[in-house]
Image (tube, rainbow, N blue to C red):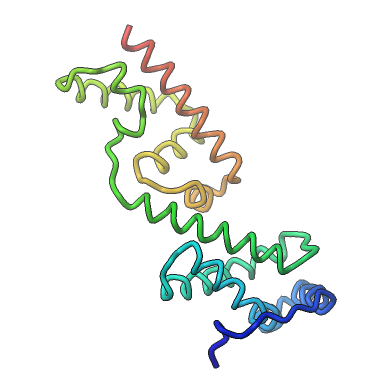
Length: 189
């Protein structure tokens, strides 16, 4: 049975009943039946963004794994539109994570370092200064900055690893980056 090509038939009332049933019972088979109805839509979204059939099929399975958890966390009014947005966001995160695999030197990411230390022979001093400034950050900022810039993790991965919310991760990275810039500017005077 190739459910990637079946047309989507929606029954909003039935969707709500299946969601309620899954939330109450936790039975993944119930969620699977609801999910199966929307696989062509989800696969289409994945194919649109990921541009590869096999990668898109893998993404469909990844989205189902996310659904198992997220359906219980969100108040879903229209499952079809909600799962569309979830699928799109999942694909965008996959694309972003794919771009992160390329190693980028820390100097290129932290744009204020070359400004403070323009000579090539000052890179070692710049990295030492950066290490000292990172050590002065609070632990949440240190962890987030290290995972995001040094280990090349995306926001979602940082949130998953640390247990911080996505908003907290973004805040820690933004504030940590600002604090590093201030620290590096003070040390360069």
